[in-house]
Length: 123
Image 1 (tube, rainbow, N blue to C red):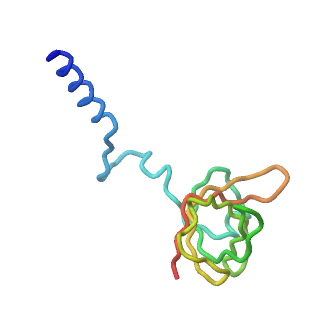
Image 2 (image 1 turned 90 degrees about the vertical axis):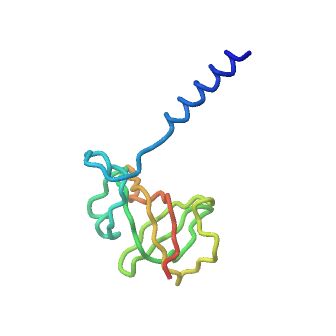
Image 3 (image 1 turned 135 degrees about the horizontal axis):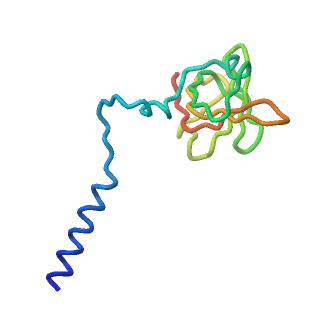
C-alpha cells in the first residue's frame, strides 16, 4: 500500500511539472507567433492572409446574424464572427468603441472576415 501511494505521488508530481509554462523573457523566435498585429480594415482587405492574428479597433455597427457583426473603423467595414462566450458582458451599441483581437479568415467566394478571439470595450 505504501509503495502504491509513493508511486502515485511520484507520477502526479512529475505530471504537474509537465503542464507548467515559462512566462518570463525569452530570446526564441517563436515567442510572438501568436501575437496580435495592430492593423486597419483597409490593410486586411488589401492583403488578407489567412490565419493572421490582428487587433482592430472600431464600432460594431450592425448585427448580421447570430454571431456575425459588421465592424467599422470609420472608413471601412469588415465582418466579424464573435462567439457568445467572447462577447463582452456589458451592453454594446453601434456607438460603443471596441478592440477586437482575432484571426483573418479568407474565402474563395467572398471577402475576408475576422474570427474574434477577444472583444474588449475601450470607451
